[in-house]
Image (cartoon, rainbow, N blue to C red; front, side, top):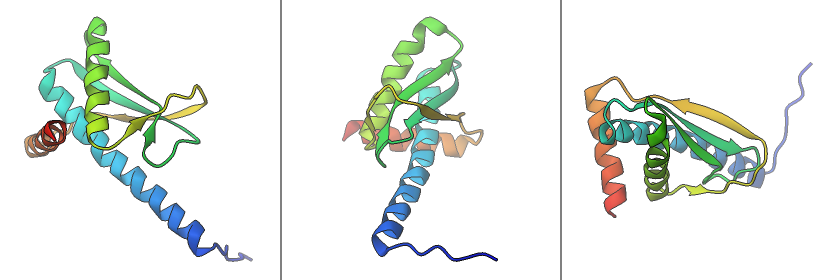
Length: 125
């Protein structure tokens, strides 16, 4: 027999904000990896976004690009961090346990162009 879980309206609202932030991160990370692929052609393999288990909704722990030319990884990471900050994310590397999500550039040329445009506009603002 299952018993329903009763949550207060405040808890339900907080859970909804967290779900919305996770969905926004998914969209933004995919856009940033497409933008990076256009800025650094042939260099980007994937982008790893790390979050602490205690991160706030708009916080990230670390950004780690996977690249084909390892010495340029820091240059790509700086660009990725700048783009994510322009999209409203903050970096908070606390040194705690993290969970990672990996993103690859979109295959669709239309999706890549739309992502590039959105990130460029955010950086220009």
